[in-house]
Image 1 (cartoon, rainbow, N blue to C red):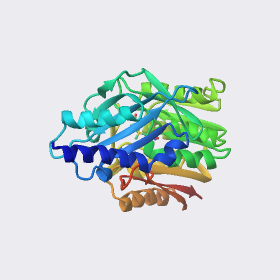
Image 2 (image 1 turned 90 degrees about the horizontal axis):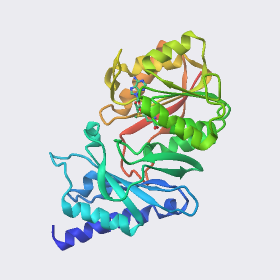
Image 3 (image 1 turned 90 degrees about the vertical axis):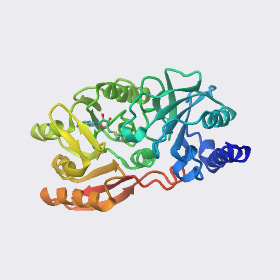
Image 4 (image 1 turned 30 degrees about the vertical axis):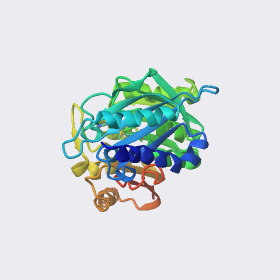
Length: 337
Ligand SMILES: C[S@@+](CC[C@H](N)C(=O)[O-])C[C@H]1O[C@@H](n2cnc3c(N)ncnc32)[C@H](O)[C@@H]1O
């Protein structure tokens, strides 16, 4: 790559950073600082790269680390040595002590993240909207916090109120933590991955301690399949005032293979049967394959099937400042009468 192009890579990273300075200054310790598809200016490597910045929440320790994601585009997977150096130089200049690189997240990341440079901690606790979340770098395909869902976490903090919340497809439970901070009186967190449920519990305890964790307590953590558990909870008479659905595009459990292309109406109908009148149906998908209109039609089909009327409270999507142009994440908060 020639000097002019190298300089432009550095300046693209720098201008993305500057665009976020106000957020960085507001003590948000977890932020996408570069979103290549919109900010990579056609650079062959940077336009398929995203960078996320994580800063320690511990007072007096500003240690920061980063995750770098590189999509495969046109058969190109590995970053050039020059791109790696550019990214390292830029991140080190911002005080980042170490970073990992995850290749092909769009394909479910065939391999775990690998070290890109520097020393990496086993984990780092970061802060967002006054809540703490545990971020991991080693032996994982994801940091543990979906930064595109920050607007929903903020909404829950501001609006959850004293509801009984069921957070399905919960991953590391960040939405559970946000709902509790927003006043939820009970939060059930459900995911099909055992390590993920353990991580969700860690995130809860990081913020609220272990008290009240248990089947009848303020927080219950269930390892299991949503498709089995929604009917099971309905049968035993559990009811909720808010249900969060955020399924992956595709998943396989011992009893069922789920795909957003065919199973969204059934999933939403099963959730609506658990929701008391006036409850919130909070639903999103992270899939470029399913258009907005189809997703909406699937949710409305579920409402018709269960004879519920949905009133849209708010749309959901990735934050436009830090994920410019990203429209793959879509969803809504509905009130279900
Ligand atoms: C897109 S992530 C959800 C992210 C989460 N809402 C958040 O904000 O952090 C999808 C999660 O669904 C879980 N999952 C996939 N299939 C499942 C199933 N059949 N039942 C329960 N959880 C499932 C995965 O283990 C993964 O943690």
